[in-house]
Amino acid sequence: MFDNHFQAILADTDHARRIHYQIRYQVYCLETGFEDRNRFPDGQETDEWDDRAVHFLVRAKATGDWAGAVRVVLPNPRGLPVEQTCQLDPGAHPNVLNAPLGEISRLCVLDSYRRRVPRLAKLCGIDHLYQDPAYRQPGTVILLGLLRAAAFYSHRRGIDSCYLLTTPGLARMLNRWNIELRAVGAKTEHRGERYPFLADLRKGRERVKACSSALAEMLSREPAYQRFSELEADEQALKLTA
Image (tube, helix red, strand yellow):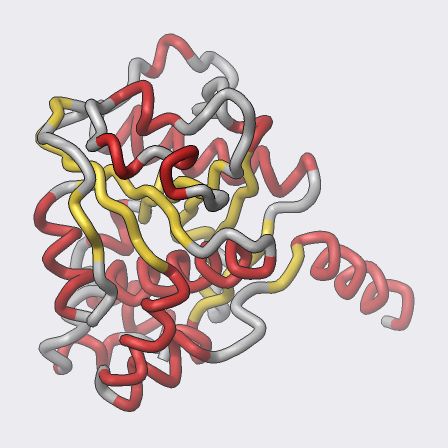
C-alpha cells in the first residue's frame, strides 16, 4: 500500500539532508511549536546528534512533494539522546545488553498528510484509505514506511534493537500492528508526555508476519528505501537522453 503511493528515500547527500532538516523545521517549529523557530534562522531544524545519524525522507509519487522524515541515531561513544533525556531502567543500557543499540527519532509527518485532506488524498491516489479502518489517514501509512526504512537500515548495520521516545498513543498504535515496544523507563516531560521504549527489530520482523497479509507484505518488502544519490543520477540520466 505504501509503495503504490509513496517512496522512502535515504538522505545520503547534503542536498537531501537539507530537505530532511527543512521538513523537521516545518513540523517542529511551525506546525507544532515544539522547537523555537528563532534558533534556526536558516529554516533547518538540527541538533548535535545529526552528525551521528542517518536520515530518511518520504515523498508522494504522484506529486513529488515531501511528506515526512525520520532519523536513526547510530551507536556511538557519546551514547544516545534518550539516555540524556530519560531515567532508563538499568537493564536498558547498551553496556548491559552487550549489543549495539540505535535510536529512532525525529519521526514526523507534515500536517497536510496528518490530517484528512480529500483533495490532496485524491491527487496522491490514497483517498481510498479513508474507507479502511486500519488506515484512517495517509499519515499512518507514511509512518509505517518511515519505520520500515529505519528498521531495514538498522538491521543491515547489525542493529537489532532501537530506542524510541514517544507518546503512549503511538506506542499503542504500533502494538496494534504487532510491533512490540518494551517500556524501559519512567514517563518524562519532553514536548509533552513521553515514554522511552525499546523495539526489538529482529523479533518485530517475525511478529509482523502474524498481522494482516497486506500489512505483513508491506513491512517485509525489500528494498525499503532508495538512495537520494541514485534518484539524482537517474534524473540526470533522463535529462541527458531527453
